Image (cartoon, rainbow, N blue to C red; front, top):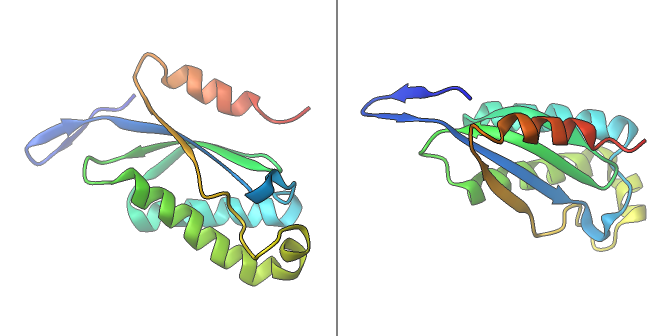
Length: 133
């Protein structure tokens, strides 16, 4: 766990985040999964936080992020879910809409937990091990 020094403060903030596809449909595969990973990586760069680990399953996403004290977790989630949904629907809309009702990609809820230096490696290993066999 890296401790970062800012102007007047020192911090190390990580979050374990999970969110699901609407209706838990298996749509995050193939080109959609590849594009989603690219989009989330770009969104993190654009918004100034870092994705330390990411696992995209067919119906949900797990990730570990590193951010600054200025970041507000609902805004991070909103950026990742909102931008990725809009751009994926633009590119893969016909295929996604055939499996989802109402044009919504993501379930509105999400899971988030803070990560301490004692659990960081456990969370990384957990995210990596969640690929379906």
